[in-house]
Image 1: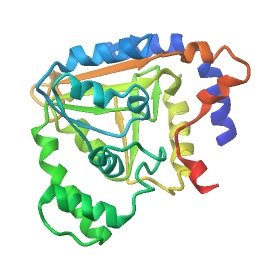
Image 2: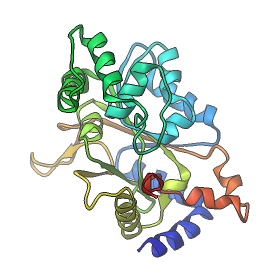
Image 3: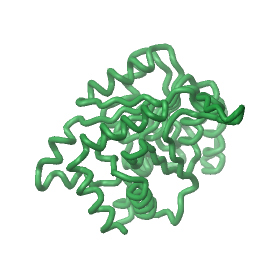
Length: 277
C-alpha cells in the first residue's frame, strides 16, 4: 500500500493547482469557504483577516502552521492562542521549538514538565506522567468551549469532496475543530489527492508508519455542521462550527514540484516514522 500511496502522491504533486481549485469548489458547494494562498504571507494575511483580534483560539498540531509561524502571528495581532497537542502545549509554555514532527516535546524530561506545570498551576506536582497528562487535560478542557475559533491542519485532503482527514490519538483536534463556532484549517497543497479512496489509503499508510495499529480518532471534515431534522430542511450551524474555512498554501510547493529530485520532499506524509528507524 505504501508503494501505491507513493504513486498517488507522485501524480497528485504534479496536479496540485488543479486539485486545490477542485477542492475549493467542493468546499464552497458544501457551504464552507476556501482560499488559495500563493505565499506564506498570503496565508497569514487571509487567516489574520478571518480571525481579527481579541479572540481565544484553540489550535491542533500543524506542521504547516509551524512553517509560517502562524501562532506567533496571531498572538502579535492580539489573540490568545493555545496549542492543544500535549507536546506542542509543553513547547509553547517553555517558549521553545518542537524537536520532532510526531513527538514535539520528546527532548523534555518529565521532571522539567512537572516543574513547568507546577509553575502554571501554582501547585507542587510530582514527575508522574499520568498526573502531568491529567493536569494538561484540566488546564485545556475549558478552553475548547470558551474558544472563538478552532484551528487545525490536515493529514490529507480529497479534492473531489474537499474532505479533510484528521488523524490523532489525544482527542484534542476533535474538540478544537468541533466545539468552537468557527473552524479554520491551514493545509499545504501537497496534502491534496484526487479521491476519497486515495485519501483513505494515504491516511492508513500515515498512521501505520507512525507506528499505530489504529489511531484513537480519525475525523473527516467536509464543511460546517448541519442538520436536516426539521422537515428535512438542511440548516447550517448545528452543534458544531457554523463556519468552516480552509486555506490551501502554495509557498513554493508548485515550484518545488517541478524539480526532478527535490520534488520528493513533497511526498513526505509527516508520519514521524523516521523516529522508529
